[in-house]
Length: 356
Image (cartoon, rainbow, N blue to C red; front, side, top):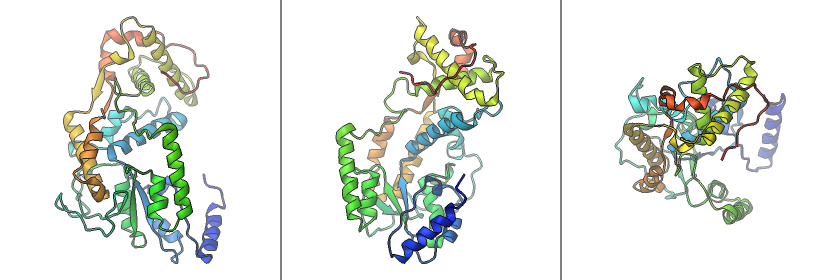
C-alpha cells in the first residue's frame, strides 16, 4: 500500500525538477503491467519529453524468472490448503498455462497488428547491439500468442500505443555490457559521471564473481531445482490426500516446507533412490520448439541489430531443459511410497529450506 501523500509528493518533486530543467528517472517494475501507460500519461505533466526504457530478456529466461518469483511470493503470502493453483504450480505447468495459445492454438484472437514477412526489419539510424528503437511491425505471428503481459514486448507495445510515449527504447540484457552500463552510457547521452560509475561497478563485479547468467534449469542433472521439486511432490501428495492438514490457513506454507524437508530426509536415508532418480516430466519436443521459435521472434523484433541469425540464442537455448518432477508417475508407483511414510509430523516453526 502506497503512503497517503506519495503521489502529491512525487508531483511536487517532478515540478521542482522540471523548473530546474533537469532530467528525471522514474523506475518501477510494476510500470510494465497492463493498463499503466494511459494513467501515467495523464499523471506526467505535458511539458516533459518522455523516453520509455524497457529491458529485454530472452523470453524463455524471462518466464522462468517470473515463475520463480511467483512461487516464492505464493509461499510467502497467498498459499492456503483451499487455494492451490494446481494447474500452474509446477514449472512445466506454468509454462503451459501461460503459453496455451502458442502451444495448442486455444482461444487464438484476431491479431491487432498485420502479419508481416518474417525477414522484414525496419531501418534504424542507430545500428546498435545494446539497444534499439521499438518497432511493432515485424514478427507478429508467434509473438501475440503468449500470455505474460508484463513481458517487454507487450509493455513496449502498450507504451508505443500511447502517443506521448512513442519514444520507446529497449535495452539489451544479453549484450556484453551489463544493463546499467547500457542505460547510463548509451541510453542517457549526457550522464558521463554515472556512466563511469556503472562501468567501474561492473568491472569490479566481474572481477569478484564473474558474470553468471545460468538459471536453475540450465546444465543441471536432474534438470530442476531441488527445493521446488520437493514442494511439487508434497503438494501433489496433499492433492491426492496422501498428506493431511488440519491447521490454520496461515500455517499451511510452513507445513508444506516441513513436509518437503521430510521428503528430502527420506531420500537422503534411502539405500535405493537418490534425488537424481526422481521421475522427470518435460515439455514435449513440439512445445520446446515453439518456445524456442517465439523467443527467436521476440529477439528479432526487439533487438534486430543484436539478433543477427539467432545463433547465440539457439546456442543458449540448447543448454536449457524445461522439466519438473513427474508427480503423477511418482504417486502411481509404489516404489516411491516411502517418501510419505515419515511426513506425518506436528507442525513446528521452520524457515524456507536451504538444501544441498
